Image 1 (cartoon, rainbow, N blue to C red):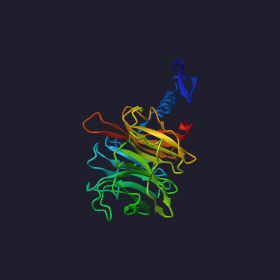
Image 2 (image 1 turned 135 degrees about the vertical axis):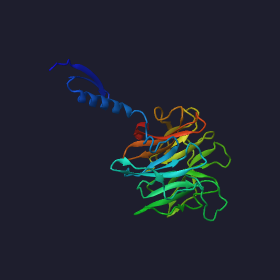
Image 3 (image 1 turned 180 degrees about the horizontal axis):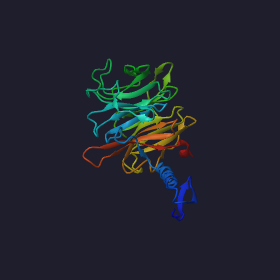
Image 4 (image 1 turned 30 degrees about the horizontal axis):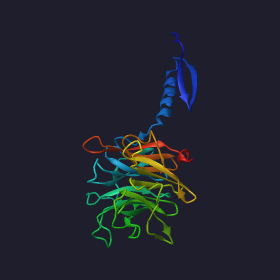
Length: 315
């Protein structure tokens, strides 16, 4: 048998550089080491979520159940004329073929957006332009919800006209205590939109409050608030021009009841494109978000994820 000379493979693991002499007689080991090297470095860049099957160039607003087995998102087809909530289930580690969620529309009779699971996974909040009870002339988005049942989802129900108003409310997320953070358009259009909270007190939602500065600003849009289950931090987007793109993702921490100065999540999460719809999965320790490319005639929108530790952004 012909002898093959040894060669040196250079690879890096967790920041430590090592050299290993690996015989050419062991090509499988070489391939495994190189694959591990590429895998570790790939984690530093956002990864497209289920390309082709779910991320198809026309989706945003992903949420995943706490157990990691149910996904909901918005199918946009690159526009805003038709917005439908889709659903998929993970079986034996494989995401199944998407279908329209039972509580959404199959005929595009209205628009449904921004599903987000509650921390216990038993409720999903979403926003819809469907007809509101006792408010037939309301045309904007209102906050609705469904509950998980033994056979699927309950009938959708409106969260009432204290938290909802004639002004659009959207991207609602909920804490363990039941407080709901959401985006609301400003009546005077100054800054376009801000982040509000409606607190759950004595079994009822209270009149919403603007969470104020430093999260909300006078001149920029703040929207898509994802609140941590324990209300310890807030992820959202801002149109602050000091960011990397038209819209970037930011984080602010709740310190003794006051929000800290927001921090831009930076590259590689933010880019020259539009990043929006953040969702943090506590069990997976992943940040999911949507990225939008407006360079074509219609928007290209896909879902991404990246390993994420919120505490790295805390002062």
